Length: 114
Length: 114
Image (cartoon, rainbow over all chains, first blue to last red; front, side, top):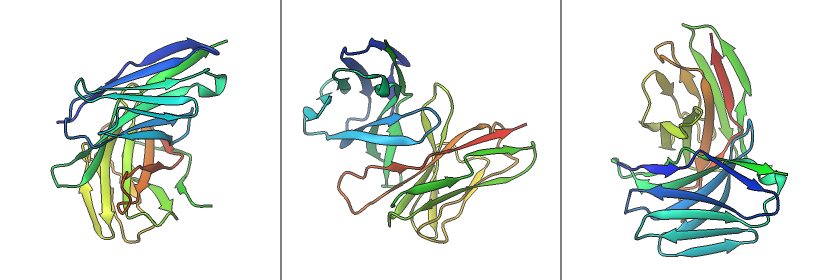
């Protein structure tokens, strides 16, 4: 079955770059996503990447995909206090019923050090 | 404003009582989902529905039930059979006619059962 793994915690100094990593197992994944969850709130989609791409940039966010190693990363440049949150990666796969299904990682809690 | 609403934000129940969590969306999305979030475990899929009057079990459906009588609404009932119901519950929806199938999340309901 699908499995998505992330480190649970990351601490970064304000102004530095944050790099959040994710590994997945399903080689049939077509899309991979990064979501952000602020305390006590739902998940907000940050960005996604199609599996035939290896990089996507959107302002301060850079997503890198290494399909051979099944490794996804999210880089946040110039990290700010407002970036403190839990970041989830997720892969889209096809379920046993032939339907689209998202499998989420455990989430990485990003803490910003002033 | 288009979006997903969940109510209430906090819910308290006594053990042995069934409780129903509300989820409504006005995004005209076909698919709706319920997830459970526990610390350090990411999101786990409870049930999902891709069309009115049809739904499928997710990874942890035992002790839960759903209905999908209207496209906009996907209520979740946590029954007394659910052995560990205290958790944060998230509802999501997605447009299956799109190409990236990103899911949009509600703000969540925190259920505490004592």
